[in-house]
Image 1 (cartoon, rainbow, N blue to C red):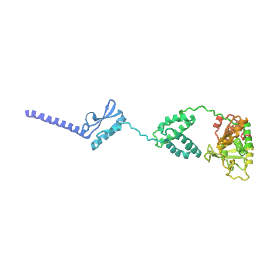
Image 2: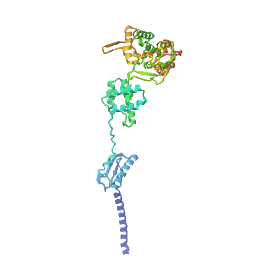
Image 3: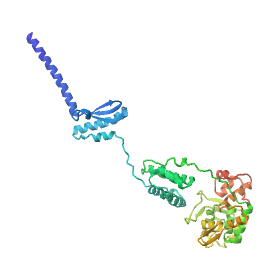
Image 4: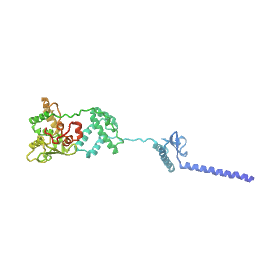
Length: 412
């Protein structure tokens, strides 16, 4: 019994010793594997490192992340990386590389020059634009506005907006900002900008109400203008009369060639326009050609100026030197009048205004307004007029009043 009594504690002691040894082995095993714990500390996640790596408060990496399932996944990924680095002996002893993964990422924005961006955008837009629009608006006008900016950094969008509003009209500033926004949209899509700082700026600009009332010439004024050209500038008489009789755009009349007019002069095809500033031919403003029926007055005018055997490509209304009429020079020197150096050009319209035969000055484009207005007064349906002049009925309805019956171009 004694022996038995004595032996029992020995056996029990042996069992306890074995159990304790087993727990110690497990603890050492966990410590040796460098297992990383993920804990919640006051609602924020932190990583707990094993004591064999560090001790005390340095055992923790504070993530700054709220304890959410998504953030626990992020923390777990870093924990696995730590465990792998401990196992392979590649642990960063400063722990900075692990802490860095929980810090907000700072985006380094590459400085972008707005003028360079615009040049690239223009190349992108070039196949989509009419040659005149590309050269006149994109390469010249808007590029000029961008060159004048005090800063070319898109991040200074607010300063750019304020500068445009201070130096340009509200309408022009709005247009420039609209194009800059389109440019930066393209840049974002192309990976050249992080975001578009001009979004919504143009839409917030209020423009003053502009009086867009159509101001046509009266019949008496029209006749006085044509007679004055016949008396003082006869070379341009047929050109001006043609503008009044067709309502075509000035560039369309300048581009007109004899191949665009039927042999009996009963129909004209308007399919091209001429840009005097760029010296190029282009399609009409709408990009569509249109047929125009000639009334008796217009037909007689064309027959009277047609050469005996005109070349199909020869101009119907050439300038005095045989070249296409320069719209700018015609307007400034012949129609309105101007001073150029020591030379003074006495314009037909300015003279007629002084003489009281024309109430006020209006530009050559008002010949178009005059034709449309007189057609409306004659009762020609708006859709028919729209087909003649190459515009939409909606535009004409917005600016002109009247309706109804004849389908022939009225004799005016």
